Amino acid sequence: MPIPELPADVPVPREEEVTGQAIPFDRERWLAHLPDAAWWPVRLATCPRVGRWPRVDRRTVLGMAEAAETVEGRRHLLVAALVWGTGTKVRSVNRRGRIFEKPSVEQLDHRLGAVVTMLREQGAVAAYEACRGSLRTAHLGPAFFTEFLYFAGYHESAGPYRPLILDSVVSQALKHHEIVTANWPLNGWSTRQYAQYLDIVHRQAESAGASPHRVEAAWFTSGRGSVKRAV
Image (cartoon, rainbow, N blue to C red; front, side, top):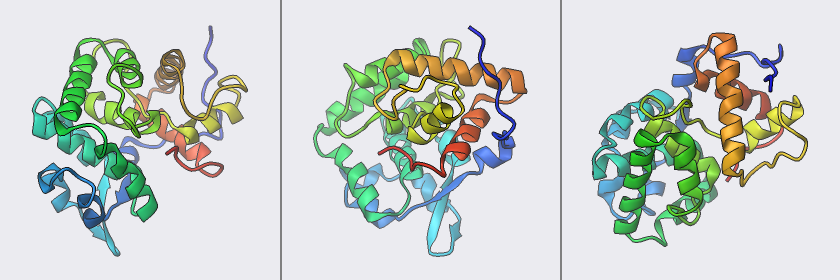
């Protein structure tokens, strides 16, 4: 089935713009929710401050995937991915912090390790399916666990697709431009739908001569005026 090319009003950002996308954060708000202070990524200590808050960019979090073979590295990567995807609003941080309430540290460590292994050995779609099922963590929905998959596996994963972020903003843009059907959900995507999304973005990226996360970022920019990132 042919995939529609990117519309003219969905420009693809440069690689530097994507990897440089920076989000402000408040360390103290996060520390109140983490199992202990050792979960806080040391890499975030060197993030530049812009105004009141330091900011972490995609490049920094992507680089942290190099340590994802260790328990500490996976913990730090999860926290950094959540920080990047959340911002500084107290309510948003509190909602993200609920992820650390229910599973024990041992359970969460097991799930993170299993997900990274699955990314490396079976690929993004299998890892997505596991995050929805056997490795599901309460309060960690698709919009945020696809961020972890993206950061953990974008530069190292099996299969034909690199993992990419899927949220309500991207979905809204895809629906608006009729790239997906009108009944495409804004959250809770099935594994089949995530695979379809990856196929669309990768084929559009190939057609545009761009990396896949540049196309994901293009769709997010297109959709962010109508709906905020999923929670």
